[in-house]
Length: 127
Image (cartoon, rainbow, N blue to C red; front, side, top):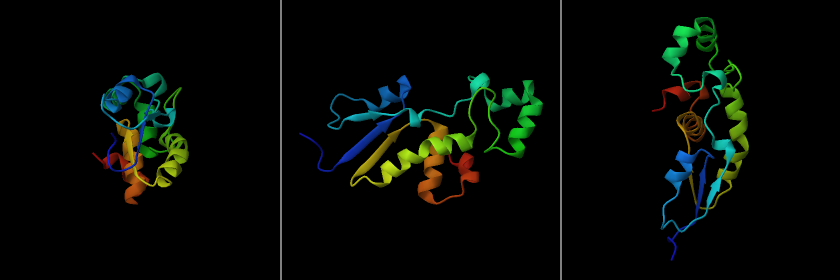
């Protein structure tokens, strides 16, 4: 017995997101997509921005000057994330029912910017 409306549930491949999206009585299949994985911080994975500012001040200054095109060493920049999300945004727009995304802060901020018609430069301000 399903719910009275169609729903497309999508999540990242990260175990915590898949676990959040999965509950026993959910009558909808879950689509697991790497497009919804968080921003890849590369060599800085596991560090908060405040910590990075302390041990990599030159790189952090570049990030502050251009937060959308400054690539994390060995990782991505926000522009890369936006490009990665583009096909999933098209898929979401084509849904006839609800689209539910279980993902991570960086991804949700970009998606919220897009669907709110907010400049992507302000996406980091979305809490």
